[in-house]
Length: 435
Image (cartoon, rainbow, N blue to C red; front, side, top):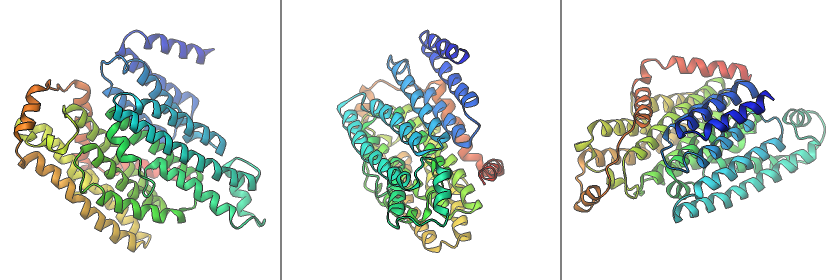
């Protein structure tokens, strides 16, 4: 009765005002977090990302009712995914938030419908692969729980030499689809470009945290990660070189980041797992900052040239954007440099020399298009057509919520080098609990 009363009270409050709706949604998330689940690092990161998305919701009618409720279902599904202990619950929770994302992405223009349809079709394909892989493992192990199947496979009983590797391979391919790991990344640039920016921010953060937590908790064989790491680093570096739109560029940048995080998981040592979790947290902060800036700047078609000459009339805004892309490129002393540095250091300690040199090579290539954006910001003049569009369009105003998010992320990116040990200590305690 207490739980039912909490639900009813929350939804009554949600119907009063949109500010109370966001506030009550956040408290409802805390209620789920502390009372229905045990404290886990994945859920804490999910709460950070979801709270940032809720702050960006505006005064539109659909952003007061439908979108927050569907977003809450997505976050609840990711919570259930992190807490799952068997294959059946994982499949059901994946389908739960995948269908909600399909609805949210497809809202809006024709491009949004196209993006939602691509996400739905390829999401259904990956879900089918995941279900088939689970069927192979559960059929051989005669149980749906991770621990039972792992104990059974580690015993001396003889099983089919083909079904087990194929089952794990299908599950990993399905998770690579969800994580936008190359070569299963074909849906990411189109969905990022066509979908609403606030929903894409939610898509870029929350499900990836859940799937990385799932990979760590299941203990999937990391031998299958090698090709995904190489392809993600390569595609993330070369795919963005000829992009003219900011959201497509961030999509390819995210693919490259997935390669770095997977590399830490593939090494499997204490230092590499710690570096991967730190890199994941830094990636979340950078993604929130990037999409908050895109929402704050009133672009016409999300083209890179629309940022030309921005430093002349929004100097602090341009400095923040410049520091952000320097950090994403891995330029010291910003937070992104430390994330890549510790991933590379853990690769050296694990004697993964080939991936180390390949990752450095891809990072140098990726730095080209980040520096190009900074050149557009500070050194490229506006064309007559862009000036006309900016004059005719309504001027975008920065509200307190966007300024708060951008300022907090900017502070973290700029001053992380002064005290990085706190974050490493936090994730080291998490890894100790895992083992």
